[in-house]
Image (cartoon, rainbow, N blue to C red; front, top):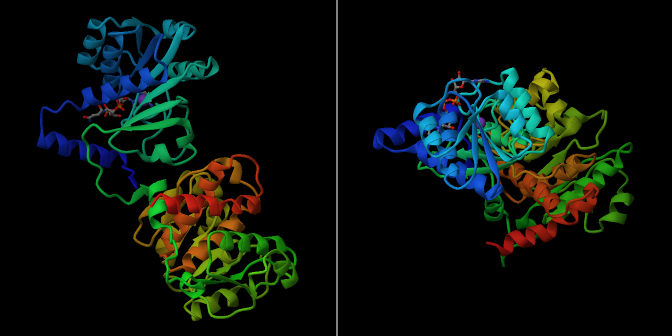
Length: 462
Ligand SMILES: NC(=O)C1=CN([C@@H]2O[C@H](COP(=O)(O)OP(=O)(O)OC[C@H]3O[C@@H](n4cnc5c(N)ncnc54)[C@H](O)[C@@H]3O)[C@@H](O)[C@H]2O)[C@@H](O)CC1
Ligand SMILES: [K+]
């Protein structure tokens, strides 16, 4: 599990290191990591380092000094002034200074650019000259290694602003929100988290890794049976949208539900012809899935209320999200995408996309349910405010039907006895990991049929 630190938290962690060891050379360690990654990414040719006036620029200049020992290095002081000791070290080591015009011209002969204009102290956006330079790097296809974060992004911000488009980003101690929240994360390229001696304490924002998914996956034991593995009731689909019923069945069955009952309005013959192990009708169950493919249903509210009355943990998806009962929904999992979350909150989709953490936390706080916000980055918020980001995957899953499968997956995991937040993180992650291992435009049901192989791989790795 990776802890994600805001700029303020990272600075506080740095301060603790300085308090314990006042002479510690964190900048030297950061520079070493930047030089190492730059050499690994592009081992030969000229390095052009774009330098700002703060400590991010200092990292860049000390990295320039290291690199100048064995390859040509140019430095551009993009903001006029720069970290004095860093500049001296770079010049002594043989780095040559260029101005703005020289920097753009030099791109034709450079093999790599190091972006050290701004880091944790970055205000969103770039001065015009730097923005032009960043665009020229991209237009000319020169690889960019960003120091700490692509200059122009805000460290704690999910949004994109005029910024460098990095191929690699070397950050220190722990990832910051901009490294993991999309669309900002899409500007970072490959993320390298360098250990420079800063400890990341547990925070309210963290990112799950594949090793967590393997450790948490509910693998059946010698004494498991269909009931102990969990019975799931699916009330999904409708006459208008029978496909949603099939997709939720596919999701639940392919992640190992002990038993699936189907109690929705899609034709039962259709379900049986595709999934003969499904039992038709309500009955004893450990969890339910409500809403996927309901459309405009007449008894939406009473059906959701029914689950609450029977204390049946529910995955609430799609149309059922607008029929939430009053009172706390402990143990439930809501699975909105950004548009649905916006409608629940009465705000715009653009607001949810620019403030995803605040929005997902708000719904978890007001309902008591865990909330899985689906999208390019998938967040699971708990009542406490803690947010766990699911393992990311490729954009192939961004298509109709993926959410119906995901609801079935999460329902099966909820029925197995996992807490709602964990069911959400595991469900979103297994779908993403399966897509990552099977790149291509597989339909959501085809992809779900590939999940058992991934789960077997995870189980074997434990
Ligand atoms: N504090 C420490 O001990 C360490 C800091 N480190 C580095 O220090 C960085 C933070 O340094 P600073 O706090 O000096 O902040 P930065 O160097 O990130 O930026 C601050 C400077 O940039 C200017 N600036 C901010 N936004 C701008 C924008 N959009 N366009 C142009 N100029 C802008 C500010 O006016 C200020 O002069 C980290 O990102 C990291 O790279 C590392 O050396 C590790 C250790
Ligand atoms: K930077």
